[in-house]
Length: 231
Image (cartoon, rainbow, N blue to C red; front, side, top):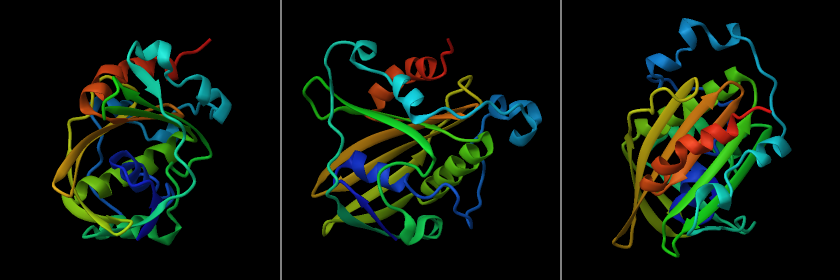
């Protein structure tokens, strides 16, 4: 499987999550908590809120005033990328195939913001998507199943091998309708980087927070509150 990404930990992570939401062929345990089971009803039996436009999602992203001092926005990643080959994870290959490109999920409405913190390598990224509840649920669930199902695999980015170790984490209880979380450790050239990713679906909106584990934990509640605010 080849995707196109920037050769950073967050870039590789985003690319792996860019596998098409409509792919088939992956099965596995659902990453839902009892509180996210939509009261035992299938998603298509619940009132379907309207999808939000990309412009509406953009206005719901966290900004510097929400995050506090020490955070600087990162510019959008340049269009020039390196080919990345994923080795040792058949589930990801089956899920994505050659059609997986870019750094965002294949949902029609999306917005993204990236920040660095304190002039260090600590980063946090927030992505918002909107689509039908069924498509959001099935798409992100399939991707997390595939990624956490392969505990270790390798990506070769621009000729540089990067070892990836994944660990499924307990999903945050009481947030949204469905929740997923994982920890990814990237190792290359004797150096390691740890990235936490947490995804929350609330109705027809999907929030994904990625980055330094402490920053994701610190801002997740605030990000969801702003993303789902009405009025």
